[in-house]
Structure formats: C-alpha cells, structure tokens
Image 1 (tube, one colour):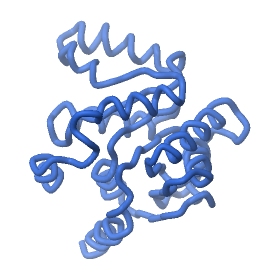
Image 2 (cartoon, rainbow, N blue to C red):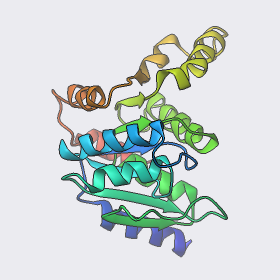
Image 3 (cartoon, helix red, strand yellow):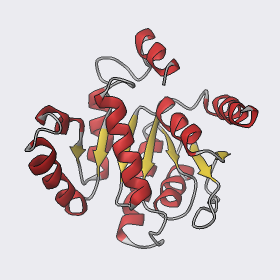
Length: 215
C-alpha cells in the first residue's frame, strides 16, 4: 500500500508543472525510420514547439518517437515507464521520467495531467489505453477532451465494427462515436487541440478538478 502511495506522490511532484500536455499512445514494436515512427516524431515536435509537454509511456517504438520529437522541441518530453518482463526499456529522450510498477497508478497519471490524447497504431496495450480513456470520458469520470486517432487506414476496421456492432446492436449510443476524431496530418492534430480549448482554456475548471480527485 505504501509503495502505491509513493508512486502517486512522486509522479504528482514531477508532473505538477507540465500542463498543458498531450499524451501519445502507440506500439512499442515500431522501428526507427519507419513511417509510423517518423509521423509520431514529427507530431511530437510540432506539439512541443506549440507549447505542449508531450507524454508517452517512456519505452521504445512509438513512445520513443514521441519523446524524441518533443525532446528536440521547446516543451518538456515526459516518459511514464512501466516495469515489464520484456519490451519496456526506457528511451533516452526524456526531460522528465517516472517509472511505475503498477499499471493503474500509471494510467491515473496519464489522465490526470493530459489535455488531449493522440493514439497511433498499436497492439493490446494501445487498445487498452484507448478504450479506457473513451470509457472515462463517456462516463463523466474525466472531462471531455480530444481523443484523436492517427492513420485512418489502420483504424478503419475498428471504427466500422464499433458502428455496426456496438451502435447497431444497442451496446452504446451513436453519439459516443463523436468522442473520437480521425486526423492524419500532424499540423491538423495540433490545430484540432487548440480549437477544442479555444473558449475554455486548458486548465480544468473547479468542478473538473473535483472530478479528478475521485478518479
């Protein structure tokens, strides 16, 4: 119990001043120099230069690309790593780094300090993160924020399934699909995030802060 408390306290102290921040999720298996890696690096650099800290899972693949792009930009590059038996060695492009033993504590930190999520192609872990974020927004446990899928060709099959099966069979409302945006161009992602917050600002309201305390 005390170990879990320590993870929350240490992470909060490190991340308290990074907002506004954008979290980028994606596969640990993507190799440097590949299209997904290069796209992520480009996006992260644009976000960083636009004033957003960039948060990733701190490991290789898409996570490394996100940290690398942000590390070269103007705003902090943040890695929230997780101890795993394989695949998850911390990358070297981090201004702020925190390692977790517990997935749920790490997930809370992603949500608590993020103003938008960008989801790149990935596997089970990426799908878990995407669906958890969608569930938290759908159920009102966190505020409405941009949840953006990049590489529409990769995600198209999932989106069709969500519409035909989950909406079609009454498992969720059609309006829940509106929680997701599909954008393929990095600069358009940056602009979409700014547009979402142009009237309310990036800082959570007092009511939204109270909701986060109960996350």
